[in-house]
Image (cartoon, rainbow, N blue to C red; front, side, top):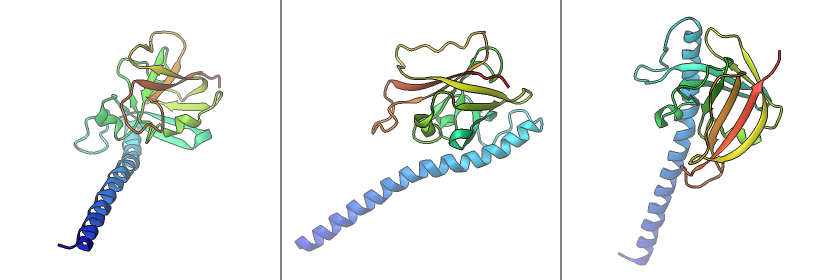
Length: 192
């Protein structure tokens, strides 16, 4: 086998691996977008009275809220739970946290590189609109953005005025996922 043949084989192999990596990255985004389409359909069924309306037959989660951020063109369906499987398809509502718009703090988490990428552009005063089945639409205003260490930070969802926390990994452009830092957007109920 000559040098030229080895070079061609090496270039072909590297191109193949590169295309495979690009495809993997694109698949994550495609899956996230397709899931939101299916989730919007399940959300409509939820609003129609169906309890735990699964977006696809094998889903282990269901829509619990709708999150909109008009200033950033965001319209997302929020799912029950915060496991990795749930967050692959959409933002998740933390179990044990308040229902959006009810007394206490509702905590919603999402991946920094898909659904919650917009959080890096959120500004103080931005409006966040949350809808939950059987509840009036709730409006919140961003009051704070901060970075915390997940190993020491605690977000309490106790009683009190309705508030909302949106949470994602940080930094937004990290090469390796799973670090300890989290980006936190805190919002308080806004008067109608």
